[in-house]
Length: 153
Image 1 (cartoon, helix red, strand yellow):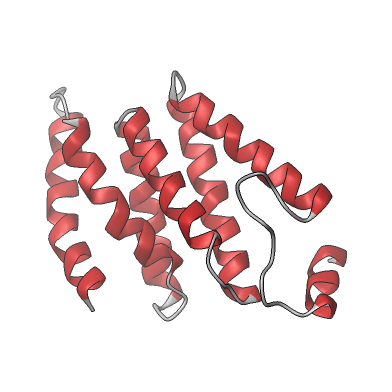
Image 2 (image 1 turned 90 degrees about the vertical axis):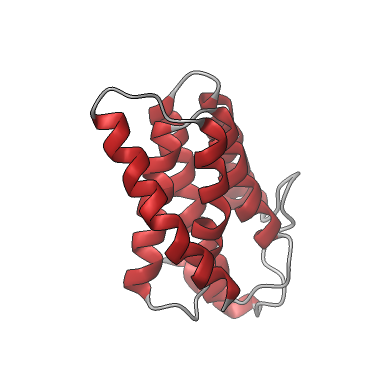
């Protein structure tokens, strides 16, 4: 797949950026931003093994903590775009988990990224309370029984 190839090219760049940051060097936000989308897309793809998705979202977490506002916005935007499409229950739950990680990373980053974290919290609260959000219209294409089982757990 095209996304997997992009991820394979992204990981060495991320390793170099992290190594440079540990040595006190600055990391360019634009370079980090280019890494966010392929890693976020990979973490959302349920056809990818779970351990690979976990590694991808952990890399997104590191990038957000290292980068600035544009990295937080790019990751959240990729997930919101995914939530806007027709999803099954497993895809929806996985997207919510990824969104939670991105929100936590943005909150830890602080500063302007904190606003992204706030928006994610509001969206998750609206989805939990109302079943939909201003940004996301809730579960699409999932039977009501499955939604009630998840909500009751």
